[in-house]
Length: 420
Image 1 (tube, rainbow, N blue to C red):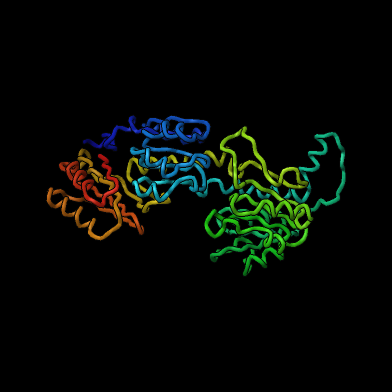
Image 2: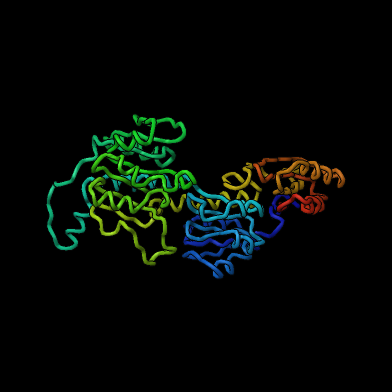
């Protein structure tokens, strides 16, 4: 093969990519420009409709609604990678995907600014009762009053979870004149004049506003209920733009009715409709000074474009080079371009990509296979986690196809792919 030859062993135009849930067109265009075959759908799919659409796909792109369960993945034998065009990966059975050598990528940081801006807007809106004032005018009532309206300047904002979103909120809130404090289970460097506190109870007791920005894990699910709300300052505010599993909405409703909370904002819910236009219900509906939004914290044009480009880049690098940087379920390996010969017309080495069970002896079997075939290895890269090993070999192209077959036949091999 010469330097300009097709880089994948399978023609790119025959590599099928299915993008669901209306991912931003910038990512679609990038994948098309790289030569892949791409189909798009505006909404999520379920059941047989999902299986029929993706069972022959090499790559599937989803957002937060499509569920790639073990049963679904078992029917997608050609699948090589999943791109989650969002921050989370709860909608994918990561263990099952890894066991099949399917790399899963997400974009955890591309929408952080959008979530931070929404949170700041809600904090101001709650303090000024903007939604109630707007609703009154829409229904024909002129209610010009300062009752219950406050500036946010001088108020204390408590942030639970001081990661990429929490720290951005910290900077924006401080610029508004708020005092910022935060609690995180791991040590974090404070930005600006933000202050870490020693316990969540202390944060609850001393903050005028609490905003939550933690992931959905076994330790965070149900972490914020009636007990935690009771420890908050009377007539304070609570915001959850993180995950719907974290806050008990019935406890939040009771606290708002009793006056323990002066208001709340919620963007995420335990049960969310699969697509726009479907019916929705919540214990918080109809309550005064409560802002409900349909999981749009990261849904700005800027964030969706940034996410789409990020995921498209990760998928392209994985398909073209074997790079797994940014994958959440398999070992991460950042790879250079494939080795060429000594001159400009030198043949490109063939790259063999192998996922295998992480047990002793696999690497030795692969090296023995290369030695038996007399193949020169110009580059080798290996990373492992507790279950999976990911080995990349740049091999002499003269007999690399035979080595690919030998590696794939090893009992511990999960999936083997070759790049020309």
